[in-house]
Image (cartoon, rainbow, N blue to C red; front, top):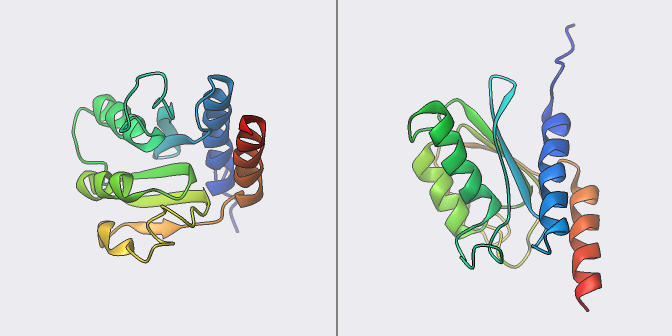
Length: 149
């Protein structure tokens, strides 16, 4: 039995590092990384406040960076790791990138695609994995909003 040096938890930690960068910028702490063949090719976090742009979600920033890195718009062999379940906009963008796999940490009961029973928006070939390091992702979000109150 061989042990894979990099797994979903390893890359989710990278996404959490990005979420902490967002937290430090007073942005909602959501982070994302995109991985191709066990290599992080894009890192991003929410920038909606910084850019005054409602579309500047971590996933959207990561898709743009990954497409730029590989020189093409399709991310067929890539995996997105994101600390929060994607919303409709980000799932729709994931569909168009044809990304192979989406791994998320915490559920988003109000706006997450899977929680709202709209998973069909993801590309039918995209594998979805949830709950990776869920508690760590939830704790960071709760700390952020607790400090806002």
